[in-house]
Image 1 (cartoon, rainbow, N blue to C red):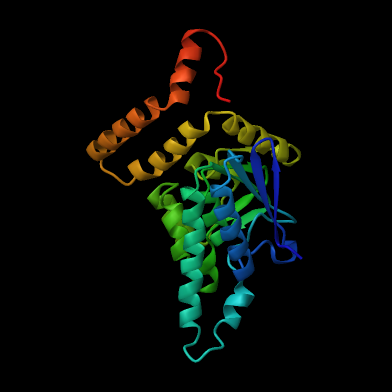
Image 2: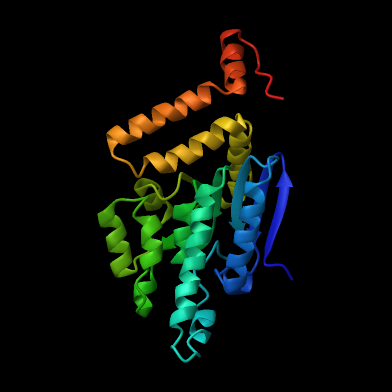
Length: 260
């Protein structure tokens, strides 16, 4: 039985993690399924936005601890398995940001450890009221070092360090204030609000969004001068696209652009 389902509608691909009995943990199988689907979506020009969601009581509870403990049953105590696991997980997280389509996390219940990392990694995130977030591995003796990478690129360092060292959970109000999510909505409105956001993104000129998403992450790693130089070249590339020409002309002529 598949643990990840893809459904496409209105130029939006929805990926649903479906292992509720394990709180949609990032098991070996789940990581492989996410990687395969993200690779397929990246090459699919009909998809303009992606929603990532989970079934059951939780969005994602992080790595599969039972699977990780089983990985210890080797001569090296699991060293090779653990190294490979975190490489594969990092590849999935980086793939979310490297595919041309914006990815929106639709979060409910809890998002803990690598599940919180998943939320922090997605380009945008909407959460149901009552959702809780944590990088709580420290509570069982495992510092959330890889989730830390995404978290410290989303929220303030002091807030991230407190979460990482205390295992404290935050609610949707604090998650929004810190920048981990865009906003929260009542649980019964989460599906519709996320779909509306995805369809809004999907309605924009694909080449502009594709160029913009790539530039968004690249410039963030540069100093201010480099970022302006790079972003200027990106604007030139965008301006020279014939569909951008059509979009600007349509705006000036007070008509809808023909982006067919």
